[in-house]
Amino acid sequence: MASDKKSILVIDDEESICTAFSKFFGRRGWDVRVAASGADGMDAYRRQRPDVAFLDVRLPDSNGLDVLDELRSLDPDACIVMITAYGGMKTVMRSIEGKAFDYLTKPLDLDYAEELALRALQPRDAVDKSGAALWPPKGSEGPIIGSSSAMQGVYKRIAKIAQLDSAVLILGPTGTGKELIARAIHEHGARRSGPFIPVNCGSLPEHLVESELFGHVRGAFTGAESDRTGRFEAADGGTLFLDEVGELPSAAQVKLLRVLDSQIIERVGSVKPIGLDVRILAATNRNLTEDVRTGRFRSDLYYRLAVMHVELPPLTDRREDIVPLAKHFLALLTGAEKAPAALDPLVERALQEHTWPGNVRELKNAVEHAAAVAPGERISPEDLPASVRQTSLQADDGHAVERIARDLLAALPHGGGLYRRAIEPVERAVICEALKRCGGNQSEAADLLGLHRNTLRKKLRELDIDPENAR
Image (tube, rainbow, N blue to C red; front, side, top):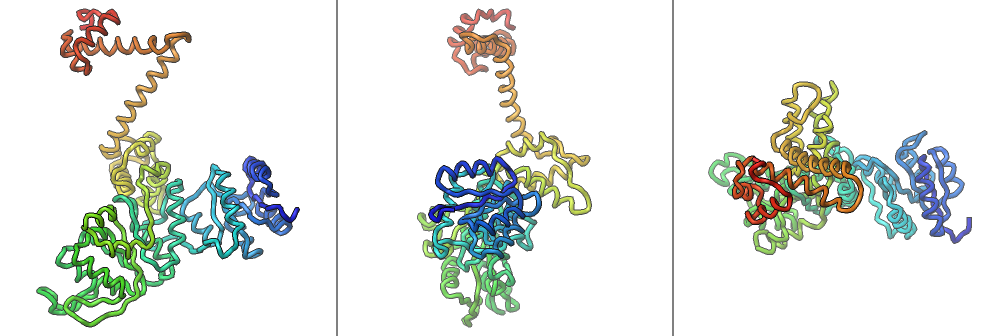
């Protein structure tokens, strides 16, 4: 191999992928070698020592993640990019645990693959390669489901910040799973052996916010019959998750800022300082930058909380994850003792077409409802909540129109004037039906059709429709 040529090794059993890599990178001056199995890939790596290796997760003779470990043992400095058609969080985080440089999802974007390969050639100390096993978060409802492109960025973001000790602000609409993300960050960071203490700031009575967060001593206020440990103190050595942090009242914001800066609290009714070691994760569905602008949220507190960001997409931006999520929730409801109920194809379509204003939480509730009312081991459209069924019916109307148009055009002979010949029968049928419903009254029919009466009269002449015969 010429010394000035950059080299890559592609370990993948799909011939089309190997060919695509060879042509794409070959035209750009790379030396490209391919291998169709894990064993062949290891042999090729030993012989070639490529600058970059692209490694498929699924190989005919082995798991690509195991091959990643072997390559890493052979060459601790190897730059390896994983290839997967199953870009769920478990695969992504396992890749990062094995110190993969990055990963690609199928169908492949070869321009992005080249970008990764060029980045891999940078000096090692210029590349951010944090490694942390972020799976599965304890205390959660199981894995964070989703292999959509919208979730890939979330996974990468989590992997980069989990090992840091900075404050993190998790943003996203209601019901997108912000606490699940917070738990993943905690469980796979340096504080994983410490406590994870969640607190919903929006549910705290305003007069008890400080007591809940910082604790109180006996006699601090009416009803304080004994000392109480606050959430900050309970989280010492671990992580405090402040959900709905944007709902904190102004007085609590001031005290929270002071604690974040000093890592010292004072219980309500006491002046004795208590030193703490707590990582703060916060979440909100509010637009905090707008709240800062209007003075509703303190700017200094915002910048203290928002050292790092994770932004979760709404469910409508990750529609390919909807059915896998629904099946996951069904499996949770069923347990390990039996197979979960099956989803009728019409149910899957209805789930994918619904707008999901409540996001993943609404989907979970819809699945629980359907599972509860389904008479057998198969969930049908009638088992879904009414709101989801209605969306499906509206979509069906659109599909019906598409079918009519397709069938109508297919039935017409080819030639000029196709649009007019297709539209005229539809116009005639609709106008005649409107006149029939209105007993031949043209004014009422025009109102029903949303037309001016003169426009309807013109249509009657053009289409040679006798209103009397259309009754």
